[in-house]
Length: 453
Image: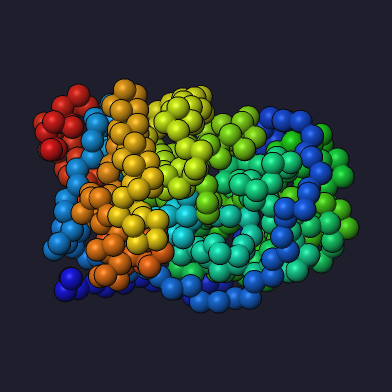
């Protein structure tokens, strides 16, 4: 493939931050959901040095030679129309301060942040940049972010909901915990724009015994947070900043437990924000490992206009997979989304092609075909959208052809940065084809699917 690529970079100016750059802190204790369990042996100590993070390449032309245009299936109903209306306001009203959020929840194809970064850059280049969005609470081995470089001091333990069934988890399914004073979590934002007003949101698991934390922006303490003093449950803090920091740090002050579940950074201006919520090795059923009440509360707080569910690969490799289990997981996910973000459009992302070793066929291919069939039927019955990622790769066993072109890795499961960027470009093109019909004024929710094919 001789398609030319370029790297889309978001340039940031110098960042200056001083004491007094915050306006106030808003507290939202939300709902209390019972006591947190003791943390078992599944947590791991993580100490990550700062390392440069390579930005994925994003195709400049989304109608790429050799990559088939794959349409979205389904009409998306009024929810999709609402999402497109928000995008239209961003595009036509320069005085708008509306932030439009997209949330991608998925497995390692999401967690690597190549696919989601390609989609993020495409949306932000066309509709304006609303900021980095939601981030994992700490650096973790085998996880990557295109937006931030983490540095954890050694005493932090990071718990993962895929393997730890004892702890309570919020949105994302991670919990960074320490009981030692003088420890820090540091976030260096790679392309944060400054000077630019922004807002930081922090989610903690509280408790009467929990400790205090200093919030430090570019070396200046901007607030002190008491994460305890109340019954065990979830606490949410919002800190407006007059200047976006290039580096944010959380410093513990007591020998008391501090439990951070997530952080987000957004600009206080118009633009698109895309949250990457991915877990390596996860299936859709992982949502049931998270505290249900808190998950609904956090989804409502984030208030995404488009939710992308990107699962299916790990289900296909699961020897205990069944269509009934997948339908049950879809039912559970739908119930959570209806209760928390009923106005959001939902897009089911069909799994990309995969193979076990070099075998084209066998149980994995059969499972993938069944998974796509179940997802497609579910989307049609519930007015969700569906997009068949495997068709971008040429269909059955396309992963082998992509590996030959260095668009996929030789594990025949994951793609290279370029392969993920091509895939993101194809999805963005499919969304924009529907959007163009919407703004042309001749497309209604019930007619979108037929018109776009």
